[in-house]
Length: 522
Image 1 (spheres, rainbow, N blue to C red):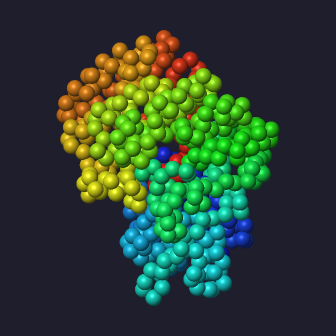
Image 2: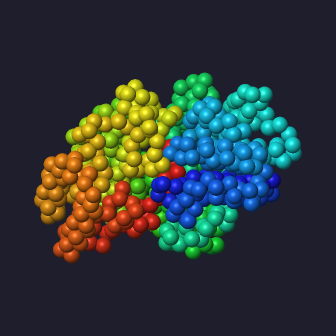
Image 3: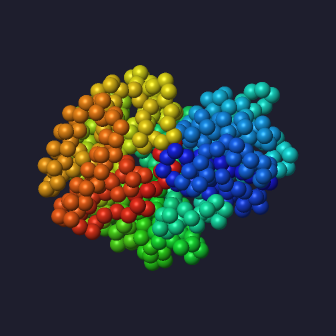
């Protein structure tokens, strides 16, 4: 069969879908033909419904497979309807939005014939095999379908990731160009699942679905959600990618790379001996200590990315369901700095019920942590998560709650004063961080912050204001750099959510800072 994948990636940072690449690999392993439409203005394929339909017609697929994200659901709903009308072929949708909102997706888009809920590495090939044989795909785990005017649900089963095929990178459109634009950095996954159920993350919703399937309460670990790839398999795929492509480093985008210490240490020994390239990863401050961090650095780890999220314990505990202590966070960042291992801090501001003082404290916390890189995103409640339910309970979701870019746009309602401050902060948040640094930069940026906070709305919204601020920021940063004064700056105009610490030569490269956060519940 011929299967056409649609990966929506427009209006937001560019990234390649590891999930779609794996699914394509699974189908090609079974002898099917696949093609991917990577819909992103960054790869010269902006969202253009007429172009998508024309390209789909030219390929003439037997099945259309759409990767659904909440941020692109309205456009993909429209696309599915147009493709059904133009091709008359079956359509299957999957992804986090489909998994967490299955009934709503089927109700809102009659053009979707099948829905893959949960992992698709086993269920999608099973669906394609049934369709190829002309059989009704009834009774397949993870596959919801329409039958006689009604939606037939299916149980959700976790995939055995020891049998998951390697990514189909050769079949990804323009992979060489994507690789070159990232200077040889390749995104990979070693594990599946996460020990935690932070309210804003897809793991929160998936954990609840697993409890429903099991008929009991339990941790993600107890429910079998945490799965580890065999070290042999992981090393084999990394070596194959390294040997075929011009790879300079690997970026492990697992939610919690070090969630199993023994497995991590076994992998590190093999990676150091057999791969030897620099690498970066995501983990939490609860899943590392100085000893493990030292082993990671010895095995070539160049950067560790941590979720800091918020300084307020009330927000962490009651809203984010992520009550990691500030003391532990500070200790881990101190350990990274002592080891010469670069660190990166993810932050979520403008959360439901968060005050402006709470947000300011988060920025001050980053100054104390002094990571090599910082990313700020605005709170985005995704349907199917506890974070979304809390926003609904508080009545702070806007009626027009939709945005392609979860980093810089918020569907939450704020007062006029709060909205103004959040908008200012979003554009130059690193000023607040610099103002709290133990650095000669602090008084300069403190004066800028005071001036900006006092700026009235009409002046802030006036044409040219943001451009003048950015120009002044660039000039001030250049002067600080020449003087050897530590400070944060924004090096990439297209990624104003990312700031790097300029401190001697310990700056971060673009490709280290620009992961495709496929796992963050979009």
